[in-house]
Length: 260
Image 1 (cartoon, rainbow, N blue to C red):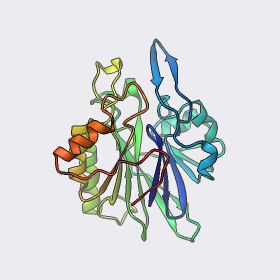
Image 2: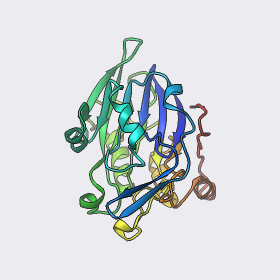
Image 3: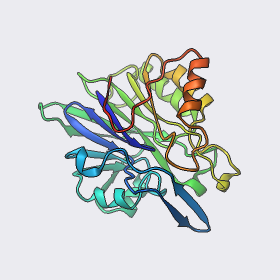
């Protein structure tokens, strides 16, 4: 597996001969004025859309927020054969396939095999946040001869991570034979806005450590830690927190493939 970090939550995952793009955001730095609040993008993408090559599928945790789907990313969707997201997103964007929690879809691989993508529960903030932040999803990528990859999406709940690992170990996820996660792409950064009194909308560094302990011995690859003003804990904070906990962290270099 390889992962190329574009910036924020956007990353290209190369797995099983397929190219999968998470939460596409390719706009240059700017301000977005949205219903009385401002979202500020601080850095542009480390990789252009054109240089990524053909994309087989987009894994979109949700469509409501500009850091997860900006204007350039939205334009990209129509050129991608498969876009997977929430059922709500499917109702808003033509061509999107919505996955219910624990629902799976199989993607054909160039070698004749399949890659299974399963929608996972995620919560974009504290309990009860959905009327404000909306419904979001995570993803599990699996195949009989592939590493099993967890993509958290904008999830702030360690309990949901623990539930995933419990279900995997027990073999109770329909259609999934893997019993553990090999690589976890965690959306961290402790995103905060005044909408919920400054409560973290994604994993804090401490919560990411807790999640990593449940996911052990998975390789932890963090994204969603830089590039936007509302990310309150950058990669340096995350790295120090993991080091203090005695845990390994695979920080992806901007724009360069990280092999795992």
